[in-house]
Length: 112
Length: 113
Image 1 (cartoon, each protein chain N blue to C red):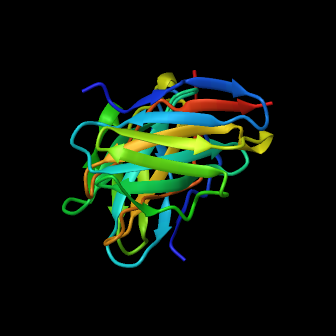
Image 2 (tube, chains in turn yellow, blue):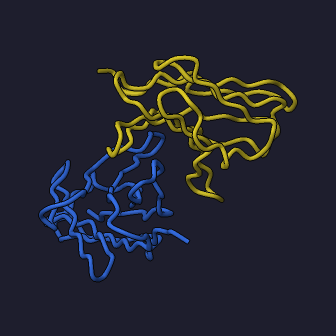
């Protein structure tokens, strides 16, 4: 298995633009997580899905953030409109029930 | 509130010496316990986990972790450190009947040649 795949790896955009981050989890994993990592706040859980259903989105910072999982092999995290304070590394992770999470390589987002 | 504490922001160890990275947790019941490593510009990599059984868990790259229920600790250890072990290490717990993993803030490990 190729592991968790994220795209793009780097994204530079201007404030106000829409940003879409993509994730392909490991096949067979039934959980998918979106995290954000910054120097100031460390690793933050934004939202997670179980069997494609959003379970807890309490970590999503604002209504500007939304996430979808239309099927077991694909998820998106969208920011609209983007702001400079959204600059961070965004990780997607997947897991089996009760297992450890396997992380993707991350998307480094810079909002100018 | 449930939490994970990594009391050291940074740990410096000479190459070849044993290393310990500390972790304590405050979670009800018997949680699952994890260690992850993050190298620069990379995602977190799973190192090892404890669910039940032997208190000493062996993981990747020669690392092991010791579960201590009375002290609610799960310290990461390695008998002989390598320079290539230099990275950011995260302790994490998953409470029973919870889907989410709670991460500590991370400890930066520096192995000095």
